[in-house]
Image (cartoon, rainbow, N blue to C red; front, side, top):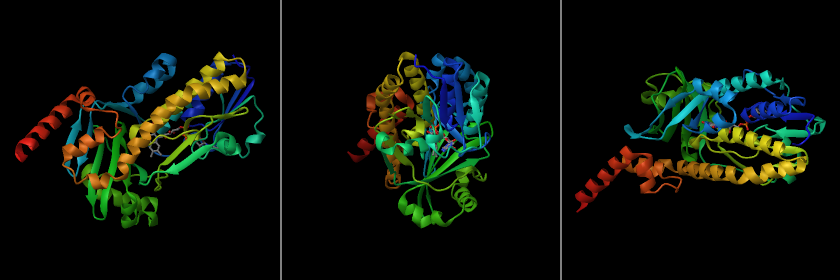
Length: 384
Ligand SMILES: Cc1cc2nc3c(=O)[nH]c(=O)nc-3n(C[C@H](O)[C@H](O)[C@H](O)COP(=O)(O)OP(=O)(O)OC[C@H]3O[C@@H](n4cnc5c(N)ncnc54)[C@H](O)[C@@H]3O)c2cc1C
């Protein structure tokens, strides 16, 4: 076990809070401090989604946290594609969701309960000022810790072509749904799902041409929300969209070649990002924390532990991140795909990762697969 007397963690997102919980539990006499620039009750966005089994790793590793989170999650077994007004059910594609703020508050309580020092409303201005055995960069996409040793961490950062804004809707959808429409100025997509009994995430997305045509760059948050609610009036059943730092952005594609430099270590979005279409960024952040804590427990020397963390965790995270990147690229030209008949569009969606062949699809979504195959047979019959 590495000797740790003082750990400084920058950022109280899922990665920072969970690292704090794991380290303070394993090193009870160490000072473990998490510093967050925002107040405790503020965050960006609305709910986050996990694939339905994605929190299973917590059940084994940390039943106490698992027991706090899972009862507060919304769950569903199928997902729905609404393609220009035609609904296609994708059976067997289950997800579970929770409000981001609710998740953070559960982790804050757990952290305070095990004795982590939590400091909110205090931005870390200089990493050099943090005197500790270990400095954890859990400070997200714009990580100061990463920037403090940029050459050593070797990040690459690009952005996907599409633009999106993350809204909320005061209503509950039955399943995770993707609604594709042709609005007045081009194709739009919404990813929407409930994360609380009467509240849903509603992310609106369009390509670069649509972004120009809709003039979203010139609208403030409230006006963007008003117009998007108008375009998606059928999906929303007339409900408004609400905002929370719902600015238009392009999703970042970040990957760091190295995850530690001296006594500084990165995890979560500070080290890598995963497009929201596969719902894995939060899970990756929590799993990174578990891997880091394990490596620090198993090795005696800090350098060896950080090398073990990086060596063991990077290939696993890379697989998921690559899957997320492939998924994101499918959305880059969803507008052109809208010319496909809905079942073919849905098939293209389901097989977008390139890892699902027909046999796997039959196992994963048997009802959809049957419907698709009979559609293909009747299409072949018609053309004979
Ligand atoms: C539109 C969108 C939808 C998403 N949907 C999902 C989803 O459905 N499911 C999912 O799993 N993931 C989703 N994600 C990704 C998920 O939000 C992130 O992967 C996850 O939050 C990463 O956690 P983190 O703790 O590493 O970073 P963050 O959650 O970004 O936390 C970093 C924290 O560090 C703080 N900080 C930064 N700099 C400083 C500083 N200098 N001093 C003090 N504090 C600082 C920030 O204020 C922040 O609170 C989505 C992301 C986006 C953009």
